[in-house]
Length: 81
Image (cartoon, rainbow, N blue to C red; front, side, top):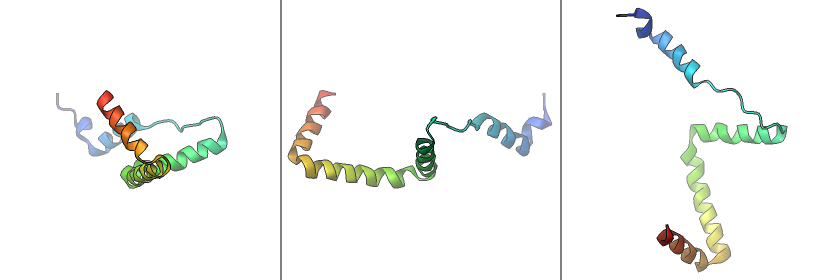
């Protein structure tokens, strides 16, 4: 049962493209769709390049806004779950 077509790299590549292809996302509101495509395009390439700095910025902003209450709330949630 040796089928040469299954071992052909070009056939394998087109098969994977068929499996992984997704239809374009449409959020039914053009500005939101454009923003979504812009964000996901960058997140697909380097997710941690954006997520880690944004996480640190959000944590610093929360700490600057609420002070040590954020630390107490985080500790409470950590022990609660």
